[in-house]
Image (cartoon, rainbow over all chains, first blue to last red; front, side, top):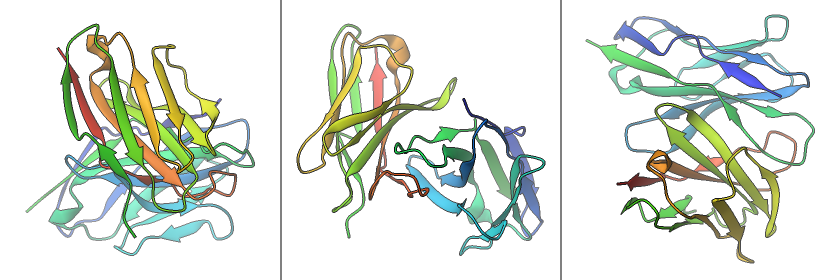
Length: 115
Length: 115
């Protein structure tokens, strides 16, 4: 069984400040890791993913996440946030090597960016 | 290329009724997964279909069922609706749905309200 823990349900931050959204996972098998973003009244959009290779992955809009196997973490960071980054962020895992594509999600972190 | 579409976007039903939700995946995608999103339980996996076969199933009662057609379009059905079934139902499609961390593309969701 797998589980994902997002310790912070809400993270308030001022515009242009750095932010880190924490994600820890638990799994008895190897996993793929994902961050999704959800804007109000919309579905989920993939922000970035870790499959293999470099443990640091980046998105096109300035977010990055680092896979830390020893700490079973996949924290999301951005050095300078913008008002438009206000949204709900979900960390998710998928079993590596299976034939099904079930995603197990964390409970989400609401990022609130203010001026 | 058109994204994942879900119909209807909003639905209001009363307890005891049944409902059918529809999902059209991205052209060429063969895997369709369904998720339920509620404030209390977060995002939970319902089931996945691949080439018209249910390949994975979450921990939901038998009132929740689904199917996939030869054109990969999928429907999910909920019978004997309960108040707790009020949720945002998200559909996601992926190219193969196999291991390899295939990216899942989400639709905007169907907001079901049970009165």
